[in-house]
Image 1 (tube, rainbow, N blue to C red):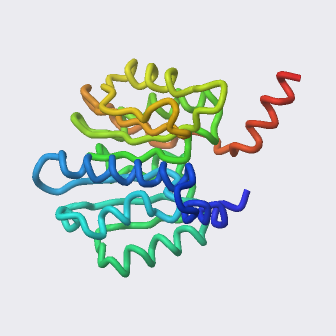
Image 2: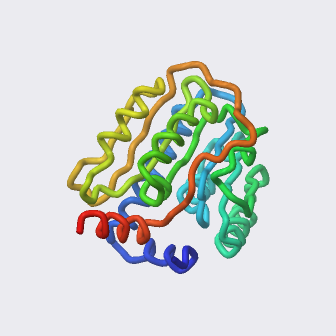
Image 3: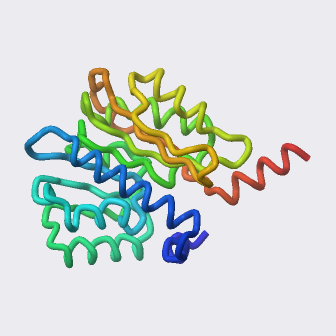
Amino acid sequence: MDWNAWHGKYDVADSWMERRLRTVQSQTRAALDDAPAGPLKVISLCAGDGRDLLHVLSDHPRRHEVRARLVELDARNTAAASETARLAKLDQVEVVTGDASLIDQYRDMTPADLVLVCGVFGNITDSDIEGTIGACNQLCKTGGTVIWTRNRAAPDRVPMICQWFDEQGFELQWLSEPGAGYGVGVHRFTGTPRPLRTGTRLFEFVGYDVLRRRETAQSG
């Protein structure tokens, strides 16, 4: 999968990807609006070209209060994100070209006020989804927010994802409608952050296309 070219689908007007992006951006803006006064930390896993966060920060009243780290493996995407941040004069945004599954990438940014896990859950196995959610209480501060996405193709994993978040001390704040054509969820952490387990890997990024082929082969 060419993940740089894949981002071009966001530019197709009223496509499901464009609508999902607008939804994530809206929920990101709301999370920043509702966050306590003072400096804020934001981390984004598999951040792509960063448009879900950077396009919000560019004109947000709290833009200069936000310290953010975006981690993405594709160097073309990180180059685009870095240029977007530069043009918007977002001096506290750090774009890292690296493996977002390695928890050490976030070591000095946790616990964060906002954690973005967008474009991840549809590309990893169920066990890795559960494990990543299990680690969100290391990434997120008490009262902090996790915004995540997952396609709603059968078998629909969104209800299970909500259950896994609930089991880890997160309360559901908002969930897109089942018929929206995509899944976007917002959870708030009500527990106490756990120490970061450095040296651990959160998931293996398999890819949606590979997962689909596996499921088809198993069902056949």
